[in-house]
Each structure stands twice: as structure tokens, then as C-alpha cells.
Image (cartoon, rainbow, N blue to C red):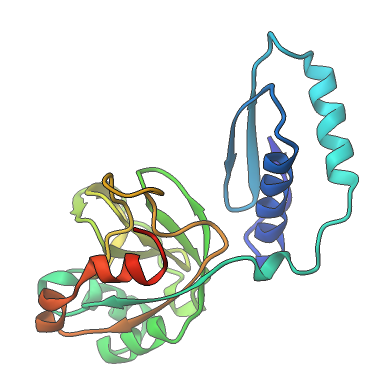
Length: 223
């Protein structure tokens, strides 16, 4: 495990993602899997192929190489529609009350943020997006008592989670997007990648029903 910071920042997350790219470029044969997270990166190795002391030396040497000043500009930019109305945002009123805002102001604030895909994890295509304003510093619930459908927009602790499959959750659900970020019939299977930038915009229930998700994938050359 290589850790780049104690908490999330764009700079820390950018170093994680660039280190991930450095490992991929080097094509190290004894690396089994590389898992980038928000502020750290896990490197799984084959212990029968190399001594662990040599792994550490290799990683330290790679870390000593300069990091690019342009690492923060690596990702693509997406505008993602979200319906916050009625059944699509069952916890919207709760989050608005906790934040001290009206529901309308909360939606406006959520849609005013440029959010970075810090990492993927927990479930296929699930994206952790950072970072929301202080009004969203609301803890997760005490239990996983809710089911979030694909495309759900979850918030807690100044983060947004954008689901791509159905999952249990203790996060607050404030909306849902017709965009589903995981498709088994496409390659690559995930619409979003770490380093991408997301901006949400509100749509009505009618617009949600009529939205063409496949067109979004096509527009980014993912088809």
C-alpha cells in the first residue's frame, strides 16, 4: 500500500492516479492487480515471482521520479442529468433540513459543483465523487437500511456516490440519473474513470423517462 496523504485533495488524488499510470506504463510482470483509491494505491504482487524487498525498492524508485504538473487535467468532462423529484430523491428533504437549506437551494448547490471521480469501488462502476461544499458534511446513516437503484445519487461526508448497479446503502439518496455507468454489453464496461470531472444538472420526471442513455455513451466514443 502506497499512501499519498491523510485526507482527500485534488493534488493527493492526482498523484495516486499518475502513479497508477506509471505502473501501467512500466508493465511490471509481477504485479497482479493495482487498485487506486482516494488517497492511496494498493499493489498486489505475485510473491513467487519477486522478493518483497525488491518490490519496495522498485516502488520507492518510481516514487522518486517527478510527477507531472498536468496530472490534475487528465480526465474527461461529463454533464450528467439527475431527477431530484419525488421517488427519485427520497432523502432530499432530510439532507436539506440537515444542511439548513431549502430543497431547491440544495439542488442548486449540488448542481453548481465540478466533482472529480476520485476512485471506483465497492460495486461495478460505482464512482466516488469529491468534493462537495461544507453544507453536505452530513454523516452516513447508522445502518444499511435502504436499497439504491442504478443511477442513484448518494451523499455523505461531503462526497457524492454515483451508483451503477443496485446496492444496499447507508448514504442519503437525493436523486437518480437515467445514465447507468456500467454496461456488460460494452467495452470498456464503465462509463466513468478516475480523474474524470462530473457536473450534474436537474431534469424532470418526464425528461428522465425520455432520456436516451445509449446516446450518452455514444457521444463519448464508448460504444
